Structure formats: structure tokens, C-alpha cells
Amino acid sequence: MKVRFCLAVSCPTTHQEGNGKKLCPQTLGWAGLTCVAVVLILPVTARLAETDKGRRKVVHVLEDESGAVIVQTAPGKVMTHRGGSITLPCRYHHEPEETDPARIRIKWTKVTGALQFEDVFVALGRQQRAFAGYRGRIALQRAGPGDASVVIHNVTLQDYGRYECEVTDDMEDDTGFVNLDLEGVVFPYHPRIGRYKLNYREAEEVCRQQDAILASYGQLHAAWLDGLDWCNAGWLEDGSVQYPISQPRDQCGRKDTPAGVRNYGYRHKEDERYDAFCFTSNLNGKVYFLKRYKKLSYGEALKACQRDGSTMAKVGQLYAAWKIQLLDRCEAGWLEDGSIRYPIVNPRARCGGPEPGVRNLGFPDKKYRLYGAYCFRKNKDGSDVITNGPALGNNDITSKGPIKI
Image (cartoon, rainbow, N blue to C red; front, side, top):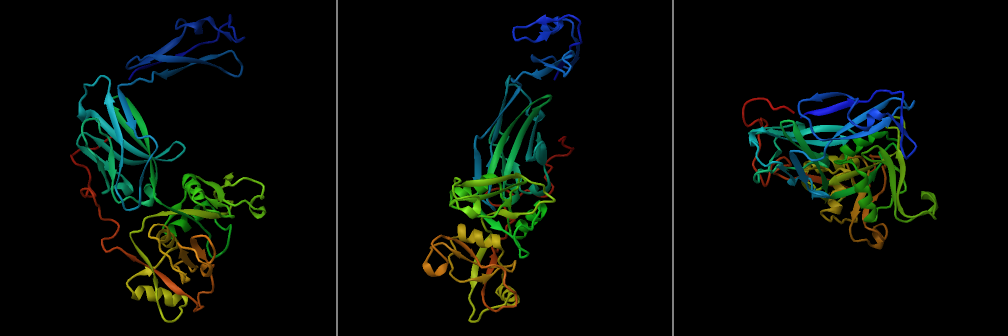
């Protein structure tokens, strides 16, 4: 692709414009400009910008918006759940139409921050390569000419986010974006050591330990619309600190303020400490209450779940079972983090109040034999089996030779 870059030089004489600005006569056309052309000249749009001193004029050159490759992606977002399969839609066409398919490079990346991207998948002709955690789980849909869509199998919590589809034909390229969302549940979390004890990295880690990830603002907002009300601020995945209030009250930011998601803004990720808002999705197993004739200490509950062929349930697993599997149990039990909780779908007076939710009785001494146990049994087929599509081996280069990414 060839673009012409030009720089206007200082001049002693000026021309008075109607808006009061003075411009060099040279800047009124291409005459008098020093230009460098590279490879192929395209139509351009010139824009003038003054330096602080107002004497030197710089011409910024922008490419025309029409290109040889046009990419189209789905508006809005696509939705699935953990363990499912999902197509990230992306199509392209050429102007003119004639082109060699073997020269088309398709690249998918994940947007991980401002101007930060993670490589996901790249294809050039018959060659394909998947990266990191996407190996063995992603492939082109190949639904005909112009299809750059990819299918992701065994979707994980970490797959949630924004993806970029880039199609390149020699020097011409275009991009589009697809937002992947997951069905699931948001829950607030703080560890045994107490509230407001987590910096950002620690909040990420405690969510991971509870079979979850830090929630996004969109997920927290959706949870608020669904009735989530929590009076303690927590980290979100973008580094902001927020909390949802459905019933305004003085102890939660004043009673006369409107309901909504309260925002502390972006906080220092290392020095400042809050709770965490975690997000989890569909389970690859089942949470159940282990019935025993006697109450158990933490250690006894842990061994009881193991003898039953299970593990002790994590907090995120209990929330997913409550929200997705509609687990309703009016008996308090130990969880892996040492907390005591129980899930209520149909509220009743003797089970903790009028609202559905996961009741939390805190972190008692682990030696107390006062509670039952919530266990988690993983599906026999595991979470790594690909369904609705062919398995892709770890070596996903389908023809010899490197792929330029």
C-alpha cells in the first residue's frame, strides 16, 4: 500500500481565513509541500494542526475509508456458557471481488486492555495455528467463501471478552469486533481475613480459587438489574471498584441517592484494598448436600466428601448450582474456603428471609462440629471433551511452513 506523507514548512507570509486563523499559502494546496510516497498512492484526507507556537504547520494524512477488504461482524454480543461451543461470526468480501484465497490471512485476537491484545488464532490458506489456552479448542467454521468465523469449543470463563477479527490481503486489511458473553452469576466475595483486604491481583486470585473470574461491569450491572444489592465495594476486571445498590439506605451511600451501581472509579491496583465481585458460569458437575446423622467439623466434612467420591464445593460452584441448577437447601454446610453457606431458591421464613440467594454465615472455627457439607462431583466425561465439533490436536498446523502473525 502506498501513502503520501507531506510536511508544510514555515512561511513569512500568511493568508487570513474567515475563522480568524492564519495559514501559509503553501498549505492551501499540494504545491510547496515536501512529500514522500511509499509503494502505492491512495486518496487521502489532509488535516492541518498548529504547534503551540502557531508557526509550523503539519499535514496529517489519513487513508480513505474504502479499502480492498471489507470485514463484517455481528452487532451486539454472542452468548454461551462455560463448557459450551460458540461461533464468533466474521465475514469478508473484496472490492474488486477477484482475489486468491490462498493469500488471505485471517487473524483473531482478544482485546485484553487499552491497546493490548492476546493472540488467539491465525490462518493463511490451509495453514492454521491456535495460541495458548485456545489450542485444541478453536477452528475456522469454513461455511463458504468469505467466511472468517471461528468456532470455540469447551468455552472457559477466561474466554469471556472482546475479540478482533482481522482479514488481510497483501497490504490491504480490515477488522471487526465480536463480544463474547457468558450465562452465569455474579457474587461478592471476601476471604476469612475480613473485608477490604484485597488488592487487585489478590482479588483476581481469590475469584480463581472459588471457580470464578473477576466480574466485568456489564456482568455486575446485569446482576443489579436482577436484584443484586451489596453494600461493600469490590474490584471488577477492568480495575474499577463498584457496588450495586437496589435499596438505597444511609449506610450504603445515603438513602436519598438513586438505586444503581455505585462507582469508586479506577483505583491503584497494588496499594488499595477492597472486596471482589466474582463471576462464574455453568458447572461441569453437580453440587449436593452430603447428609450425615451427625454434624461435622471442617476436616471431617472434607474427608466425608472425599469418601463419597467428590471434593468439597467451592463458593462459585455453590452459586452456580443455586442460580443454574436451582439448588435449594435449607441446611448450612461447610465449603472449601472454610465458610458456611446454603442456597435458597424458594424463600421461606425459617430459611433466612424473604429473598432468594446464597445465605452466608461467615467463617467459624474449623473445629466446630456444627454443620453439614456441600460436595462437588465432577461429570465423568470431564470438562475438556469437545462436543459439537471435531477434536483438534495440540499440533494444529495443517500444512508445513510458518504463519506470519
